[in-house]
Image 1 (tube, one colour):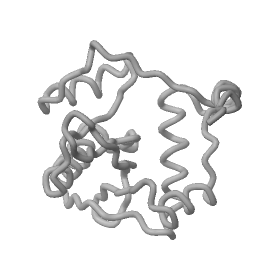
Image 2: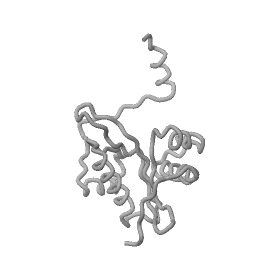
Image 3: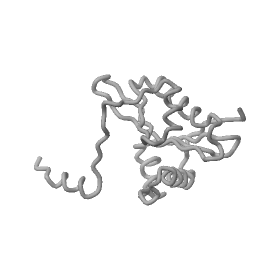
Length: 162
């Protein structure tokens, strides 16, 4: 394998982060769903620190990224590391870059005493699912992800009387 490094994203990397997010959305067949902007990402990643980003690099070239944040498990009584997005440029896939990002984040989770390292994957993304299973990750087949956003989120929020 060539010279692979993992580097923390910096404020000046926000354009690259947004570009990777847009490429991931295109891969996931939802390019119209990206609402993130450089300003939103700058605030979230580098002002509020509500999420974090690392790059996988070949030499000096950023060839992929992982965007993650911390959640909390009541059952474990500990924080967990949640991988929101992982993306590697197409021409660099199948070379170990995604695994390098996952390994880096797993080590971070262990070092920080996280109870879990979790992420979701689209059902049709069989190449990624195969990689995750080869690493020992187990699908949570008894769980269903629910989401509120947009009008539905606003509607429920308006019902708050507390």
